[in-house]
Length: 377
Image (tube, rainbow, N blue to C red; front, side):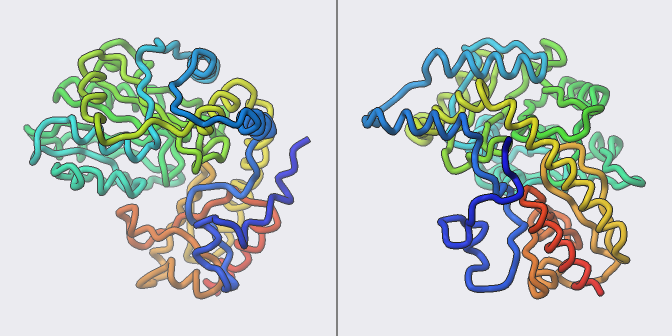
């Protein structure tokens, strides 16, 4: 029904993923966008909007808001109020705004590492200090170091930045883990900024995504939840995201910080968002099956390569690979020299690791994994 084995050729397109290695025999498996065409309902909705021919200023419309409210309720059993929505052109904007309104310059922000690189830079962008707590790999699972987290929270820590599902380690935090985060936030009076952009990409059915703000009212009142269709439906460059902020005072501070700085989302991004949440579930279901198979291929291939290891991916299309046994000074450069472009773990706060994007055709994935094995050999 949907062809993920023969995606569009992006080699000569405007793709930053593919242009990084233009003219070189290097397979791009780094930045987190998939090689697949967007879902047909999204493409059809965009065509209809383009045929209208007028692209003046636009506000989010009722059917768009209804599609998001209903989609979140169906996927996560969380009924949000439309008034909680704050529209954004992207998730990274959302991180930086959260840092900007949390406390004062010089206050600190806590994040778990390794983590998506903008988490590491957003505090400094807003004159806050980053506090890191490193997650620990135990057997085949990345875990929070709860004693370390508690010890690192300072008197002037104002914000907990949470990534769930987690990029790059692929974890879906459990209800118990989320409750512990909520309890820490309440004890230390922290705002929680929860990046949940990968919430539609859960690969392990036994580990459903739970928005932390859906746990209870007290946690919801201190939480900024960030979501977007961009990763799940592969529409990142259409620039449409949203924050969900139940607390009216927190929401007003957030919106005030946006004034004069943050533009509205792209109208085509909003069209794509409605189509994704309203009519994109059948495509996503087939996509998830394809990604599950790809994730299993990665798991098996990496397990067979001496010196490399990884953990099962519960969500996302990203595999976090431990290369430390190889004792390479720069693993990403080593693999690039052998024809496969991976994300450098140093950018995530973890030297000695690389991140592999398996949101690609099976043929490209198998060739990439073959090159990884040859690079190690």
